Length: 80
Image 1 (cartoon, rainbow, N blue to C red):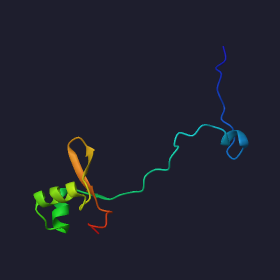
Image 2: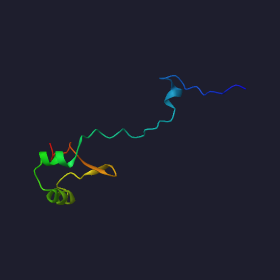
Image 3: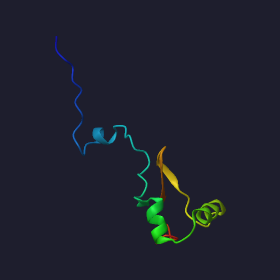
Image 4: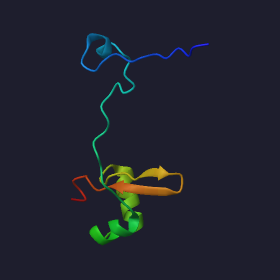
């Protein structure tokens, strides 16, 4: 019994261009992230001040890389 293998079309052909693509949107731009300790070296503000500024939209919000690791974006104007 022969194994039926599906062959992909050659790169650059019309058949290749018709293949479904996994990525429909381009990936997000790279953002350098920093932890709180590094943030406090750059911006000498108290933790509560940063927290209140985040809530008011005056400081970039932190986000979670993992459930236990929150970071901020270094690419924002307030930190550059």
